[in-house]
Image 1 (cartoon, rainbow, N blue to C red):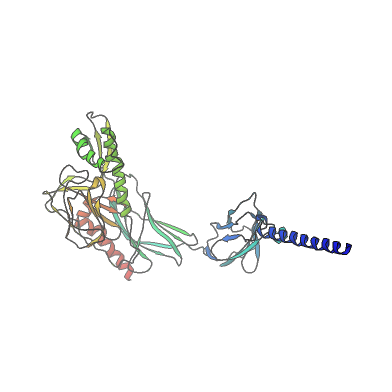
Image 2 (cartoon, helix red, strand yellow):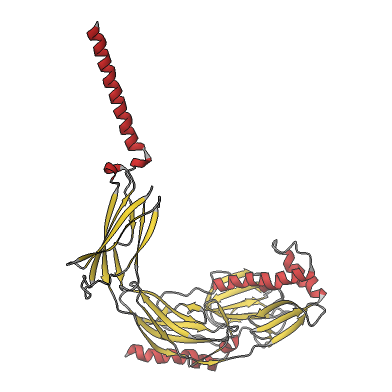
Length: 458
């Protein structure tokens, strides 16, 4: 009997031990402290480096990072360029790797290897944690992109446009643009690899203007080359306009009632400001967005005719006018806006024609601009036609030069039948009068391309 009881106790003890072992094993495999997921090292496997800008390596772990080590090698010698531990329960950290000041590595080496080692705070592997290692192959590149200006418009007028044709070469070119008056203008590939053309603009409300071509490669080498222009400042008209009750209760109220954002506004002057300022900016934001696109396809040539959108028309408002509105008191401004187009009028519901081929990027109602077609003519040049009574094209249509696209009208914020004609260069409104002038186009566009073509063909 005693042996049986002793055997039973032994069996129970064994079973209890096995259960405890199984519970322990289950705990090891399920407890967060013993997680087995290795840390992650985020960085390209191959990259370029100019050794000036620091490299960025991002480490992450599902629970907590513990330590790291960064080793840089030139193939012959190695040096630790980073080492440390992480405080707290950081799950992600970005490290900046700078080239060592020490002369251990060969300064002329064109290839380097960065080895990244990282461990987490898991108790797995006898509290040593999970670890990860990654080797990043680095090509050393200290050469800046080569940039040369081939030809450009001699001058640019405040509110006007200009053309630049240039060369930009680098085996690993990453970013290329022209910076002018606080704006970035994209350049379109032109004729041969390494050559580009760009229309740029000087906003009418900016007094200062400088333009420079900026080229950056993947190693972050950067070259900036100024494009010299003779600057022509221009004084734009200023007008004071009385906001009469008829105007507010008519056009302003009609536009407000058509949009839920403004329909509930009751005060006359509040309603005026909402339409003349807030709605206007909203409508122009759409125009700017639509006109920022420029093709990345290589351009073989670009010809543009002088624009003549409305036959036998007269100017009724100029571009760039600063309009100050007052209500009864001439000395008290109640609203302000800029007129960023050129108004033309002829007969009622006159036919509007586009002088140049292009693609219709918009054809619909746009707030104060009313019914408005908008056309992309290439190289970042766009035209818009506001206040139309009827649209004869739709979005996506390809139009030909001298094709009828709409009829004049009074839609939007227009008191009389007329055409609001606007021209934009990559989202910036420019002076239509330049593009009305065949002589200006020949001098500032055609001749610039001809000069560049001679250099490119040599």
